[in-house]
Image (cartoon, rainbow, N blue to C red; front, side):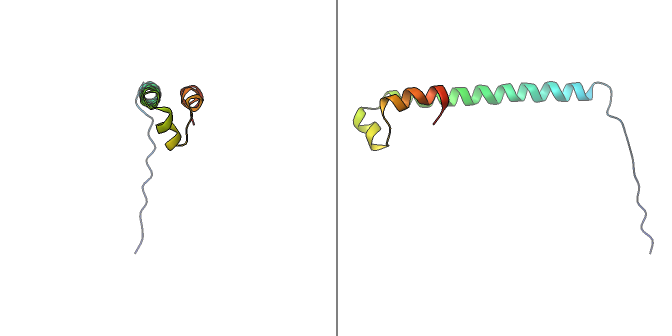
Length: 72
């Protein structure tokens, strides 16, 4: 029995690549904003902990301040 293979080559519709790039860029910005907000909320929560609580989880006040700047 013979197998038939069809090959179809098509060009993306005009502007489709540009739309894809714009959507990808917006998605990247949204991801960065989400990550920034998560870091901000984490630092704010850690700042509310007492020195004893920070010691329990192995952090210092300096670690908390540096966390927001460069991540742990």
